[in-house]
Length: 217
Image 1 (cartoon, rainbow, N blue to C red):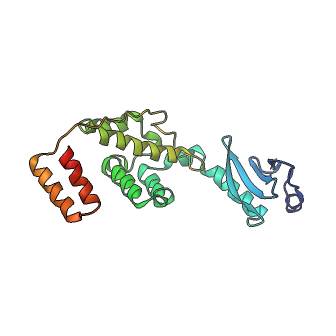
Image 2 (cartoon, rainbow, N blue to C red):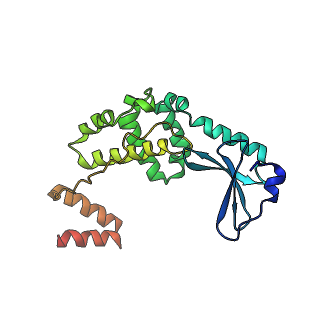
Image 3 (tube, rainbow, N blue to C red):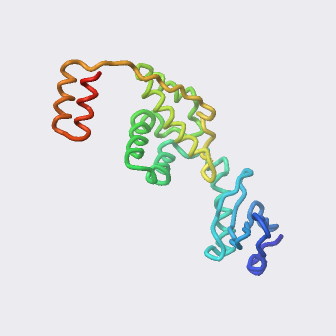
């Protein structure tokens, strides 16, 4: 149907679920009406729906303009021009910043330590599985770090490949990670003494528990 302000206002909620009404004037642009009467503007890009905003908080004209912007941002020319460094800066603001402090530190540490320097100016579409594994192969002596670096990289590239970004297909799509088995190790006498002293300083309850574990092996 041709979406106008009058037409959008007149749309009735369905008796169940939700219904999409697609605009005949702007391809891939529409409004979704829920059973509760909520009307949400959406854009269809590569068979996926991207939420634009809720009516009437977002006007029809603004929603149509935003929908066109979303679709233009996912064109191949734009996707092919963005570099790893540019994508990482967006990732930090739009994704990492929403994580817990420990996770933020972990993501930044891995991406900046292993991938930012070699890939900084490289276009996302030019980064391949082989180029990534050339880096992680060097971590073979530390299997847990190798697996962790691949896991963080996979999360980053997967985020970059999703709508509305679509910077490039993920080169790690389908990667199956092998979690390294923990190594058996015993503490040296010197290490046991340090742990015992630290546990004694901490005291009850955790310090006492650690001392009990040391005594019972």
